Image 1: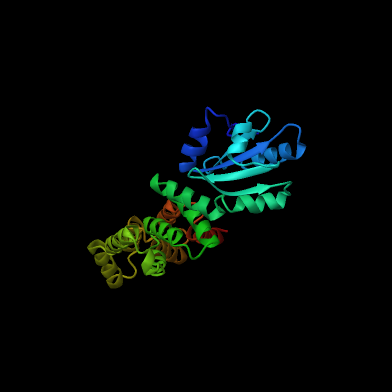
Image 2: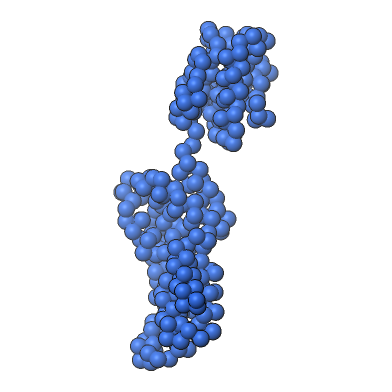
Length: 282
């Protein structure tokens, strides 16, 4: 059994079964040493719930010494386990269980992979770890395309890493029923990002570039401005065009490597332009 397993007694019954089950699920397992099947179920549950302690507390009842608790739950045979939520039994299993049967039972209560990825992504987003957030939320979105909470979180990180078109498409897919205050804040955040991405400085440089198409310095300066407002793809396209024209252009190469380094780990854009740069060099 794991350290997270709690042996249920009259002294801690209220705290575990009544109070703790208000915050998370409590699975109460009943066993007796003289019944090997009940010991096997107890140990299987402990093994399968390892790592999920934040979602489910495993509480065990030794029926030989805690008969009053077993009677309170109305236990008539072993092995038996009862899932408790907010102080009330909501489900249970009785009799010998196969691995598959136990997995199917627990699957109803354990978080899905996308739930864990969403939680990890939101935590990383809150801590400003955009690469980790983008990776987790991309995976979560791939697992469940329809969940609005995943879509909104993915849009959030997309805005923060400068993928504005992607964020816009994600927000447009959110149904009206899910357009809450978080959604409205994302719309505002996207609008601000779009305005910042087309600043007067950038517009002036774009005009100069059209007037002086062979001016390398203007193109480099524009690439820097693009990068600063999260328009990395345009920055990389511009710098790559300079290197295509002159592969010995060390300044443009350095700028391009800086832009790539600033992208989140695992970003497809970074992978694409690393390959292009590598192919050009070798």
